[in-house]
Length: 255
Image 1 (cartoon, rainbow, N blue to C red):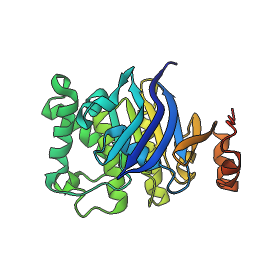
Image 2 (cartoon, one colour):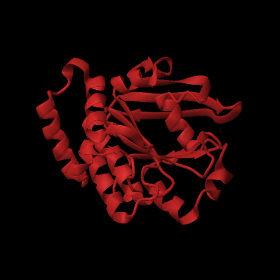
Image 3 (tube, rainbow, N blue to C red):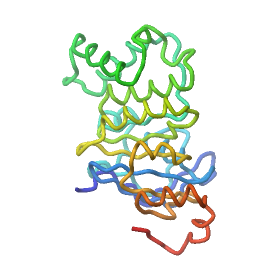
């Protein structure tokens, strides 16, 4: 499988403070990658830079999606290309209903290929049932008064609605109880396939029991320190990140 999402020597800062320091990572079409690391290592910064958050300044490197450097594109253009970001802390949007938001987002991404209203609503209702979101949420304002678990399910519902080709999950699992975690994982796994790439950014290994990565990367001080297979999950769970810090700089690669 060919790589179609590549981050090469990415450097980024916020308010003059460097966060990413030459980060490189490649995701092949059809693969699931997990990115873990201690607090402050740059995980959420990476997610925000991928989608073009204006608070972050890219000072070097590139992000290629199907050969195009998306750093030249606005966030909405990146979304139309098939990129999606599931937020760690989804914000409330008072005055905009779930139904209206999802329909407008779908239409903006798909343009002339958008579904007709009746067909869209049929698909949306089926996706809501799949991720356990009550149909009454269609008329509620987006994330307004939602519990933490409801907000995270809504993120996955958005992902199912837009059917992206490359998704980044920024610690979507944080704060979820085990039942909500299983539902969120089930929604993600519905999209996993040959035409879908996934980068799961997480602080905990438990979501990786349900969303099984092909590769796992450890981020230390804004760079990928170690990369390997699913077996890294168990070692990180048992030993934490100290052993990675000890090995950082030796260009170790665990297959």
